[in-house]
Image (cartoon, rainbow, N blue to C red; front, side, top):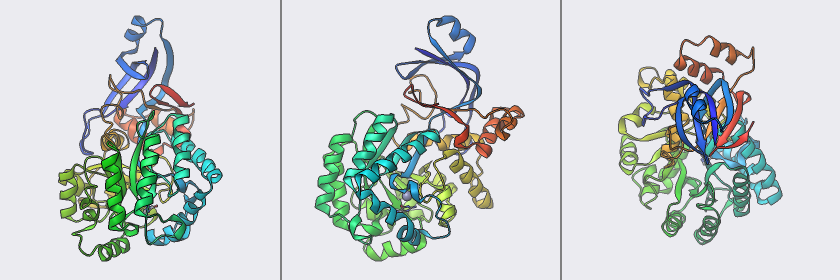
Length: 429
Ligand code: GUN
Ligand code: ZN
């Protein structure tokens, strides 16, 4: 039994990123038993009643729910920071050549260590991860996340056209390798399996059918892919799928769009597509630094919210510029500001929601993680700047908790993450 003392900020009752209420608990304690929060209340009160508990003092700084990244690529850690190219050129020149190197299990093992280290270092406790095109590399990734104890949903990335030869599969191999991987990892510890065609640009209808068969034969798996990221990509998908109504339909007509679906980007959706995503209960992973770095466009968050489409955040490493969901949230804020009257103004509680509970909801984990209520797993990030650090100065001069949180989004980096817990297990600090 452990008592954590501190200032705890979360957004337990929000379900859309607008007008979110911040719950701020100062001088509080959370009691954690077997990884689950069993009590919250004034620190003095809980300490009096639980004198035998271990006490962990997190009163300097702030404690947030563990951050949730709904779109991040395992094989792209070493590709972060290649600037100046639009999507298709960036894939050809930087991302895909790096992904080909994961054919080597030794190489994949090194990258898996760097990747999981990057997530934990940034305070990410739950992630939906785009795996590798190589089944051996996906095994290595799952082994590493299982060893560290992160909550990760991931799977074999599959394609059967338009990519370098070594990254291509077939519908038959896709089915066999995916079912085998899911058999090893789906529901083991904190890991789950996600069926992951790269994007319709590199998938035939037969491949997408094989993906649907995997989902049917392995119940409870997730589905993730990319959609409507870049104009050149969208034009090519329309040409390849001339009989599809639109990009979302290329997945939907195979039964792949539903409440367990997370599609990344959706920067250029039609109203029809937004209505369909809402009707299916699917989620969109908004990846603001990636959209900025690749010049993909300004994400229509207001339109998503108005149609009732769930939106969460993704770092989209390596097109995105790092693992920090704090930075992604700030960039989301910037982009809505730049949209002017068409944008959705975001306040710091909205940003916290997007970086935590929104992701938990998108991944069907809203009753387990995403906030610090009684009954939730203790997945948490301790943000504690050193004395004299600009964030420490900002926190000292904050007007209230919402202002302190805004300063955390403005100034916070992985260097300020002093501790990270998943299910009560300390994985950093
Ligand atoms: N679309 C297909 N593959 C990718 C990828 O690796 N990154 C991004 N941003 N978009 C993609
Ligand atoms: Zn991506």
